[in-house]
Image (tube, rainbow, N blue to C red; front, side, top):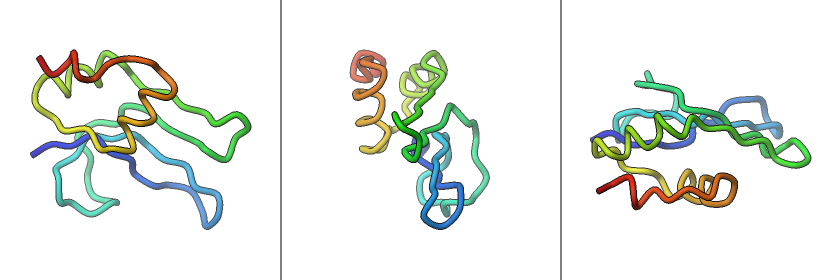
Length: 86
């Protein structure tokens, strides 16, 4: 099963995250299928970017979205992932 989730990057106490598509159950640093964007909470205000068209594509093909990514998309982009599933 394919999942859209965060992949932690950066150094100790200065994390930033990539929004990636990968197989469920793989390690955090494993090979990704596609990188969709990034999230950097250390900036003021927090930086967030995602390729919305590719995110909708992956969700429409059956990819599951992690709770963290769903929360970030809802918070920053205001798009509905539920509509993409149908």
